Length: 78
Image 1 (cartoon, rainbow, N blue to C red):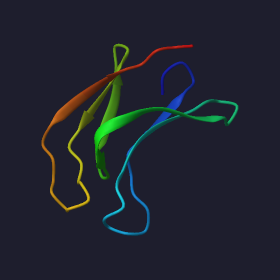
Image 2: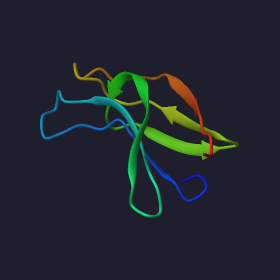
Image 3: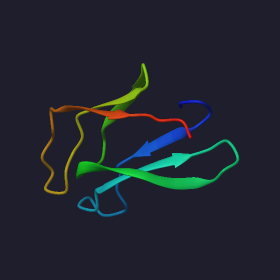
Image 4: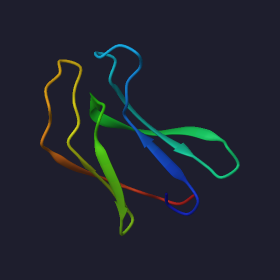
């Protein structure tokens, strides 16, 4: 959460090959906005907010491959 906003990164549906690239921001009033895309669709990743960034580690892509990259996304407050 950053400034009362929760970020949802990646994920998948009921199919094990339905990973998404979407990054959503959910505000305290319940509004949901699309705020970015991951470079590849990932589920089962880990993320933490740190000094104005979201640090993203690992994840599984639609082919089942486990990723070992660490990614960073800037968080801006509007």
